[in-house]
Length: 214
Length: 214
DNA sequence: TGTAATGTTTACCAATCGGTCAAATTATCT
DNA sequence: AGATAATTTGACCGATTGGTAAACATTACA
Image (cartoon, rainbow over all chains, first blue to last red; front, top):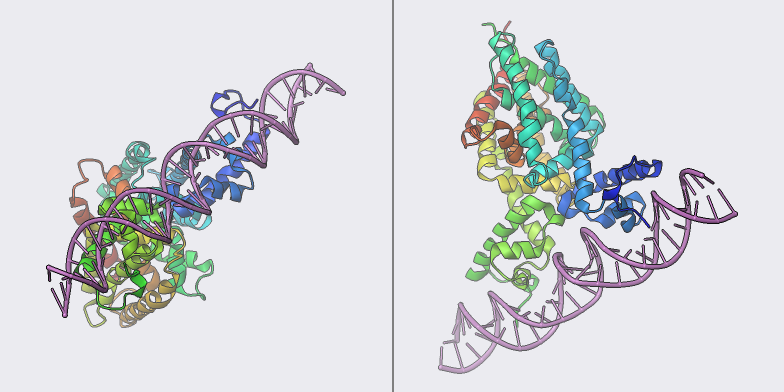
């Protein structure tokens, strides 16, 4: 008889690792487009090429799949902000933060959309993580930026809203991809738009923070 | 016998206007949170305080409700961009565009989220509008901005990405409201965050576009 | 006021939903 | 090879889904 997943305390088998990976990959496809409520286990099973009960053998509920996915994405999603270095050069730190966030929008658009979907719904599954770890991390980096401004290394600005604006502008190229492509038209819809965006955003933010000498 | 809605070619009665308004209001509540697939007619009927068949008397399908809602929102949503005046002063035009978009994020967050949900899903219901009217309007304003830069009134920049960045930063305060509030914490979660954002964004964009004199 | 058109509701339908069960199949280990 | 544990699936369940039919109630208008 099959051992229910929750009771397994031993290490995972090879098959478990492989199948859980396949399922989460399929779940990312589906959840990132339709959100939690709009997605069905059948859709995910279909994409994964497995039967529905087989999915439920690895994840006991739809919520468990979503949970596992969110946990994984949330961690890697904050990686660029964690890498933000207080001891680095302010201009190059901000520049590379923008570039990394833009690369993530380009290379992991589904992860971005999964997160965006969760936010739009009011973050019913991750509000605690937002108020806890996320706020703590942001607060920490806000202090770094504030110190830079105090030391006269960059222009004064509201660090919270600076971070928000970097998040929103970069993630826009993942979340609103259809719109971006539609507006740019067929000819500019190659991957070149990410380089154009990088150039524009680096200029916008870095010039904006440069101390103005009259 | 009731006349199916599609067959009605005459002018609408008082009751029709009232009830359709109530239904669309409720539909906006629901669709903006859960997206099209994640929303149910029952939910909307519940919010509207009407029976499900009664909703379906006014809108024959769930798609028809969504369609009517999108059409209405799409028009008003582009109002600020239409108001963008080629003959105005560049700095004040951009400044007031930002302020208006931010006011819309504050006063009509549901409309913003409805639109964002549609984008995340790949714009299955509005892709034509994006490629047509939206692109045309943006292209027109892009030429205005380009002319300003050519005339030396503002710094050179990629007008498309300028517009994208204004969209994303302002709409962020509606679409990612939960996150913004969580990060800012209880104390800064009053409506004051919109004024802080306005100050920050106006500085960011206007300073960034000011011609630099060395 | 009568009556025809409009508006509303109860009861219902087939399809799909998340999830269970037991039987069948496959992998693992001795 | 055989026993045991892990994996997979078809059949199924009650609840919910989008939508319909027809009876009932209300309104508008002659």
